[in-house]
Image (cartoon, rainbow, N blue to C red; front, top):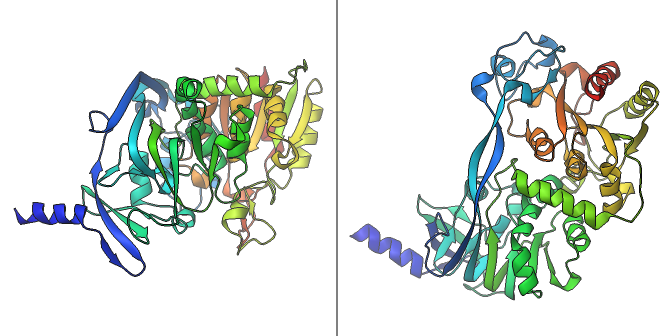
Length: 450
């Protein structure tokens, strides 16, 4: 019929104008059984979820909640439990279960492109193989999308529109490779998303990298990201095999290898455990250090990626979720736990191997919700973790990401809610900075360390 013919013409005939070409590609929702794709499954993988049927209402302190927020006060109450303190959430106490989540796999696509946030396409097809891929197409991140050369977006239910600079499919925005592994996906330029979601997929290519040692590895190094390359170097990937995407360009490979996209904020526990072990081995320096550290994570204007995202508003760096009384907290926990060595951790002051060795020695970790807590991946089982979490952020998709990461590696996690009264007023260069209740932290640490 006419509609089918029109779709076919859109697929075959690019629309040119305004300095770029528009191409409409057929959306493909699975690599499995797709012509020209080699699919290798690794079996099912399980992950942790909170069993919402076990959540119960509790008498929460009204001071915790703002007058307005992303969810209602009733929803806040449904998501928390009064377990000795109105400010403490133990997601484990709600009941959690392991559920089959996905099939781990790798796929090989011949003659394909890698574009915005790991978007995979060839001359005719766009691969939308997971909800996290669809999120990049339906809700792109402003800061990274404006740099993208391809700018893919949905155009109806089964077509993807690509805006291609210059003439399809060539142009200066394309870098060509013989064989390439892409680890890119949603937000993989950011530290947490790189470490917990993108990097673990590299483990699925161990055999390939042994058999094809010249394979290039593509990572997203946009927005002042230096850690992606640092992790690959630590894992002994040769420098000449690392391809850092920093300019929003598109990469083409004669043989392109990709792995199961990782769900946003919910990395695969078996891969996280294996990655933590491998990174600890890679960072080992032969020393035998005692496991006796209590780490307080420090957030500053110079050690968070928000400063790179908002350079206009924060020429001297952004202050985001900075703990005003972190030094007083460190002094108090040092007094309360004289048998432990307290470290005020600043990620900008240590190399990656030094950070890994530091967290490997941790007995307990205390820190505000943010990228620094990702380093719990390097810790040993039974490390006690306290996350200082703004109460007004409850109900957002990030509320349990560090519980999930800690649980995956065998750490014990508690959330200490920060009431609205804890925060200082926001400003163009400052967001959600707070003063923590030191007595509450010390009390919770005592309970956990017993």
